[in-house]
Image 1 (cartoon, rainbow, N blue to C red):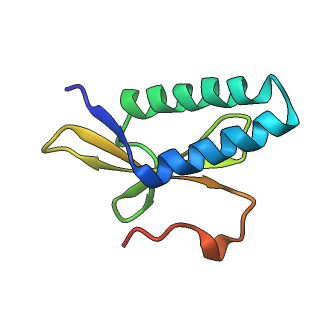
Image 2: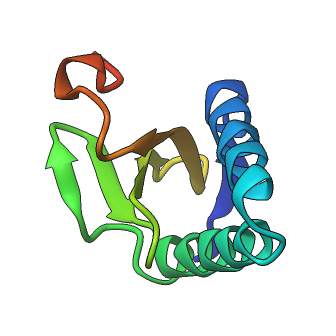
Length: 99
């Protein structure tokens, strides 16, 4: 079974905002962020049913960066949808709600 990874518009916007932020601080940081983001995608695809966060929403931390990827799995369609790329240091009350 091979799952297809789908990045929501919301998550894509959050990822773009993170890349923009890191590009203001460093020439290297945006590339490292993207590299670690890709590694997180591969980890999700390799073992999608690990990491249950809340009900059917799962989360994985992006290595070396303060972001979590929140995702859901649709076993019938063999798809994994990335819902959000949330900065862990933000106010927890602003954490995305997926219910």
